[in-house]
Length: 599
Picture 1 (cartoon, rainbow, N blue to C red):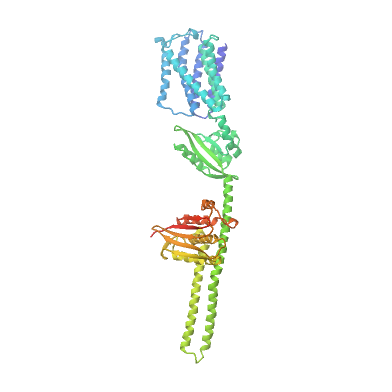
Picture 2 (cartoon, rainbow, N blue to C red):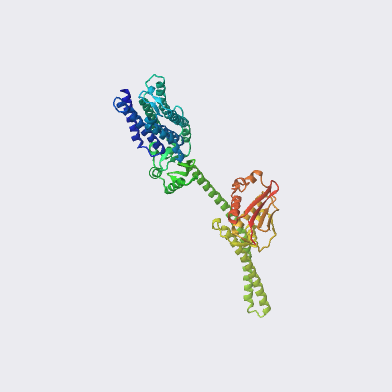
């Protein structure tokens, strides 16, 4: 009765497993394992019927024939399970059908055994009384070879993935041990070997495998050591399958978004983003990116920033594949909140530096305006006094008989001289206003224009005249090009850059007077070179290494380092030119602006 009870329990267990598998999401492993369970179910059912009708007139070999289909294909099904288990997913190729050749031949041999006796010369319910035929060695070798390979892969990858002493590995080992132990005991004669024992032992193996694979999610787990690592990652990640359902994730993901593992596991990533994480931005572009990744064999990265509450994230999506097989999609959530906050602080600091530099330039500009306008205004005031005196003289001479026409012409000539002086001074004041107005325009409002070298030097002279005079520094202008040579760009931006370089040259003398600065304009076939050379303190190697790369100053707390940084950016960005320098500590510096020039 014990064999009967065990076989009935085995059948119910196998049947229950088949129904449980229906709850699992469709996958290759589920399909292969279902085939294995069906084979074992039929095999055990035939053994059960053989046991029940062992004393009847029904030939017991009939049940052997019926069981042959499942018996011969069970090793193939187990082999398929082991390969999918090891590789996650396999592509079915035409050559895989070769694995079915020997099982099909074996089934044919068993079903037609009474005609050739190549499989069994003598069949009996007692294993010890069976006399195998010549073909049995071929079928048995193939069967045990597949069993051996399958067990090797299952053991290897269970231990590799989760360790020898994990629950999954122990269940795999126990499942393998049952048929191995029963067959060993039967071979040693300790227990009576019957066909029922073999079928039941393999049914028990399948039950252990099912628990290991599906109860503990063996196929989808990450190795223990790797799981500990990814759980400590600062970035969150999830892995999704072809249906956009989450198959794997790390602890950082659940902690970051305040979600439970049970809520995340098998959840649809799009629904999770919309309903639980509640992204403030539209997630349709994420969904489109996931579709794009699936459709391409190349790894595609999708980066976008999202604001979640007070946190910012950059999301990266990439394809996971093996030998051309799509396995899933990896989504990384990189927390860039601190980076965004740092960038905001840097931006505020830069705005403050720009404002400080602007106010400093404005102070110099106002001082220059006051100085440059003072002289022509006083000259105009003197001219108006002279004109006033001439008007009084002319008025009093109208009735004077001694004043002749020549005297009137002399008075008119003197008036014209004063008017000409006024005209000259007002024109000079107009030039000052034009230059100052140009410098008041921000870089963002610059428009491309054309200007001559003469106009450039004229504006530089007007704006820097006061600062040079106060510092008692002379500027020598060496013009090696035609004054009428035309350049493209915004003259105000270039004036601002050159003036900044002249101001730096003045400050390089550290208050020393009666020094000189050389401003030289040269050209070659394609470029105009504007050089500003001083003989001041020069720069240290540390300053030279960092110049133009970051905001650095040699003026201590009195400088921001923004002037040269912005000047370089202006020449590169607005003029498509370049700025270079040569400097030797204690001997001075030369800055050269190179601008493209088309004839």
